[in-house]
Figure 1: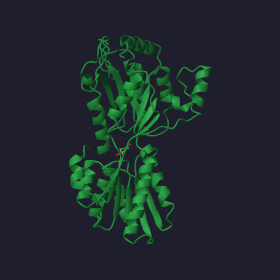
Figure 2: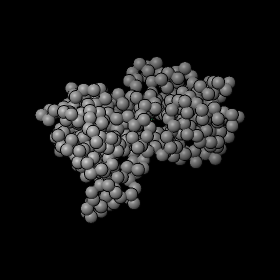
Figure 3: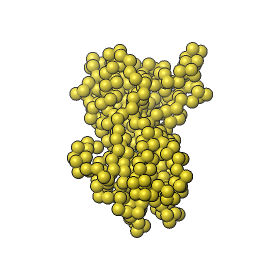
Figure 4: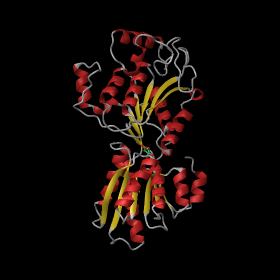
Length: 380
Ligand code: GYE
């Protein structure tokens, strides 16, 4: 459970004395004071989280969890954050250290290193992109802290052996041959399947309208490059796309999963291509921007409009857009991962093993459905 925080102070002082740079910890090099290391109150050995409450004392029986979140770029992301914050509470036996990386991998690396320094019991990481994690995850492994990945996945790069972790010969071999040991498990969505489902939906939709042999012009608004959600959705849709000679991909553009960027990229598409039949938008917030751009360009979209809009996430606001006739179909991505992660931690605490890869169940919505009823029951 809660480890000895007094040890943290000693480690920090030692590290800083010998002048080794440990990201943010080093700001405390000469003068340790409250707040130098996020989450640690160096005066009384009890840290603070974002809410400002003191961390548990040594006798408290909390499970201390560090969560490195990507940012707050979308409705989906905010629902994800809430799912963790609502569940990982002292009432539920947890003490949560929450870090928002503001869309920067370097901030996530710092956060994870600070969690290691603080000897948390578990690290939860939603990795912004798939690569670049080997070293920091090896450090967590060496510290004996289980890492639970959520939402996006990582790719372990064999050649990138950790430079800073203390690795003996055996551990080195271990790191190369058993990549997956760098994290305990992963919980999230099957993004490629979401993309495939979107492609199949388009196939059926066009066929139902007798348009299966028509030339279909498509543009894609992509999410953060190299993120699992972008890679999976792009590739999954592409599999179905490749089976249709009459489907043409006019362009791909990076909308960064945000409304503002989605709108900007869509404006560019609309001025570059006069004939667009379908927009594949890899998340709802980019879709909101795209719909705005389409309206501003004097074009229309949705079931009664001239551009078919296919989106991902299926957050409440998007289903409202669908109800208003501006989105055709939306492929759900469930952000409510907190309860699953808590269940995993419960099993690990009990010494049980957990499944390495755990997918969440998802569905899709389209404008032909009873959206009033769906919206009444929608929790995010
Ligand atoms: O689709 C998007 C968010 O990784 C599944 O990230 C997540 C994606 C989600 O910004 O809205």
